[in-house]
Length: 380
Ligand SMILES: [Zn+2]
Image (tube, rainbow, N blue to C red; front, side, top):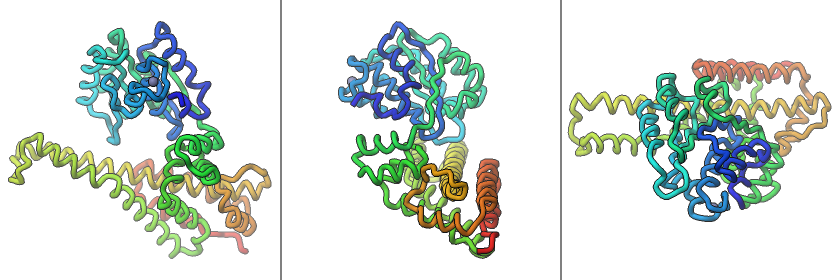
């Protein structure tokens, strides 16, 4: 399997990357890879790195390929962050790394996975390095869309735009690469609406599938005001649980590492001069947990929207494929006892809740308002 094969449905979009890897004389030193979440931006960046380092142009099997893909290659540096903002010191380190020659590989490659999370001051630091990099250095910046990065970055890099892949292509990938049963792969690819990472998690983790079922059940379980308030509280609790599980272990490790670096890991009292550094870390961690919680909630709302979208497909009689084919029975029932106007109202309420969550409204308040709007209005 070549390194490019994982990029399902993107062969046209990634053609410039492949061409540059095959003909290094046509190389560009700064690339901007964009695409919606789950379309495979970081996969494309790593595949490109592997193809550049591999003597076979990305065979997917040699040491250069496997280490470049996993991020372990000595000459491939990946900055992946869950922070809200990439720190200026991190970028300063990257710029220094970019100046050095490749140690064993053919290129020095620097991948920044969330280039949209850089403040202007940080971006400026990057500009010169992107504009006049050493001959063997390649920058690959990733972002959701070209509009998400500063225009100064955009104008100095070559743009590769990924698109949302077809769910059938995502299902095929899950079968071929992850060995998922074809029926389950298809169900998960549609349920994830082509988000490759979400589809894989659903296919591999029964708990993730169960959580999604719980969320979809909200659509039929909310009857009165009491149900709505409880449902909103449940959703927030699930998101908090998820965020805690995802971040707790790492938080402790990071704190211990910092204390060790500061020479304060003997359990004694921390000198006041060092306290601010620990406090800074704790604040970063809190922001990361908040962000994770919001991402989980946003995903839940996207799942619910997919269900109402299916209801509207039945109500309109459009005959399109359902995102939640395995729930067809429930969806047809809901479609039968409500009107299209109800469905559209629910979709509006969900879209509004997403907007409010992104705008820092308290999650409980945003979700309560949404859950109240989901109550059925049409008499059966
Ligand atoms: Zn290879």
